[in-house]
Structures are given as structure tokens and as C-alpha cells.
Length: 343
Image (cartoon, rainbow, N blue to C red):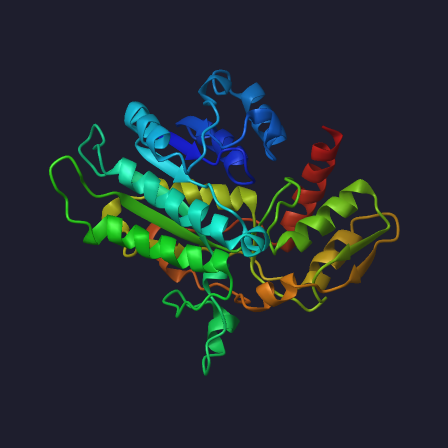
């Protein structure tokens, strides 16, 4: 697989490059910022050191809203698969909804349009893989089950601009995959989306409403004796370790089209409360670890997300199965956060 990662300097993209190389694929990377300013610089540089030649495939900075430049890059590179990861996250997007729409929707459509202009060497439609989110859900009158179980078929009634953009991304993906009418010089894009839970890794919090979990792991790794987070102790949303998330992206990209029954899939892992995460961290420390729960405006965001995610379609269609539960994630994250802080 020849893959282009758009948004390669962020939480997911910075680790996906190494995961693709480890699986024998050829990863190319682009971000709107130069490498030295990217939040995921540490993870990227670790991959560059491990995989000779990868650093040479870090491309000059490019904003996803620069349509002409992005189209020229994709036309020149002709990747089999594009991982479209450029996005504003929930809290940042709510503070700047216009920019959130432009990046999350206009940027995705620009990429999809560019990909309609070529076919893969094997004649298949090029594949675009893009994260959706639990933020696509929201409270539905008369349907308490929507937030209790995250049903794969929805309904989807998001309460944030970030969530709105993810629902639009899901529908754009379906349209470019199935409803788009191919014409001369313009074909379909095999678009595949993953409705992710909160993702946990050793990249510092970056504007998401699930960042309270990462704040707990980083505080524990720093040796802090007290930390304040912005949700109630009983707050429960789905979480997944980044290693599982990366594997799900690669597995979905590689899955035969004939096996897929939808364009958007839920993927789940574990479902701890904030207090359960804090206690898992506390058990692994040799010093006091006080957690102060001071909910702010982000509490309303996470309260509008499901407590669980049904993911039976991913498990049956392409064999999805998570590997890390809360205990495994906590061990891994404290180790990796300490290494990240040391770097």
C-alpha cells in the first residue's frame, strides 16, 4: 500500500506513519505545520529513527484548505490509500465553529474531489480512510438507549459543531462511495470511516473533550501528587488505546471491499468512568495522587456522547477485535508518557 497521511503531525497521524511502515507499507506524510511545530513531533522522530527512509517522505507543509496545492500533491503522488486525519477537535471546534467546518468538511471534500481524478494501478477506486467520532451521537428524545449503547445505525443528533462535521463526513463518504455518478475523468472514491471512541496515547492533550483521561495519565507520569480535571468522577465514555486505533485504521484500509457492508463502522474497546481511570493510575504510583473534579463547559459535550459503542459490524465484516483493556492501557500509557516527558 502506498499511503498518504494528511494531518500527519497530530495525535493519530504521528503514530500511524510508523505503524504503516511496520506493516510493510509505504507512508508519505503532510501536515499544515512544519515538523518542528507538530504536536506529534516526538512520535514522528522516533519512527524516523526506526525506519530509514521514512523521514524523506515528510512533505513540505500544506494546509488542507489550499485546494489547488492539495489536488496537485495527490495527483502527483497517486496514493492507493489516503488517511485523512486533518481536523479540529471538539473543544477547539466549538470555540471556532467556522474554522471547524472549513477544516473538517471543506478540507475533506477537497481531498475527495482530488481523489476522483485517478484510479489505482489495479483499476480499483482509491481508498480514503477517515475518523468519525462518538461526537456524532447526541441525546434523542424518547431514546435513552442511544447514549447507553451507541447503536451502529444511530440516530445521530450531535450537539457540537465538531459532531455535526463528523456526521457530514459520514454522509459525504457514502455519497462519494456509492451515489457519485462517475463521468469522464472522474470516478468514485472508496471511502471508509471509523466512529472512534476517545483515543489515548502519549501525545499531550490537544483540544479534545476526552482529554481529561490523558491529563490523568500525564499527571501520574510526571509524579504530580494532585491534578484537576474538567469532568465529574462518574463521567463514562468509551476509550481506546492508540495502538488499537492504528490497527483498526490499517485493517479497515486493507479489508476487501466486497466484505464491507457499510461506509462507517463503530469500533469499541473499554468504557471506564473518570474515577475508574484515576484509580487505575493511583494503584500504579508510590505517592499520593489526589484528583479534583471541577466540571466546566466540556462536561456538557461528553454527557452528550454514548457510554458504549456497539461494534458488531466491524467484528463480523473485517475481524475487528481490541487488544488492550483499561489495565493494559494504564500500564502502557504511564510508561509511554514518562518516555515522552523525558524526550
